[in-house]
Length: 68
Image (cartoon, rainbow, N blue to C red; front, side):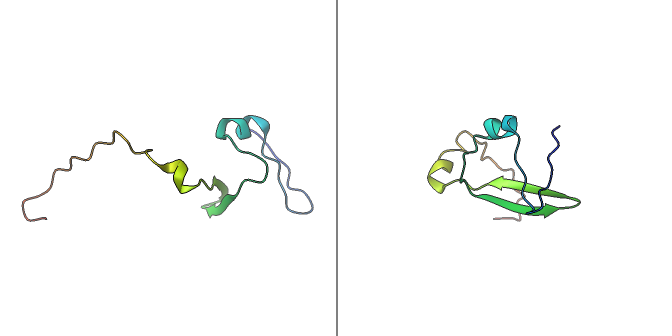
């Protein structure tokens, strides 16, 4: 776990190990959201990059007889 300090301008520096693990680059957009008692930063990825990320997922769903 890493600790960061909130600057007087309300800025934080994401530790290098985290940046490298997530492949973050300078100037990249992040969504910020409050979840319970914490702040989460979620990288915004272009739709083209998302292409094929569900390849191989099991799409067989057992449905009840009264459902379509």
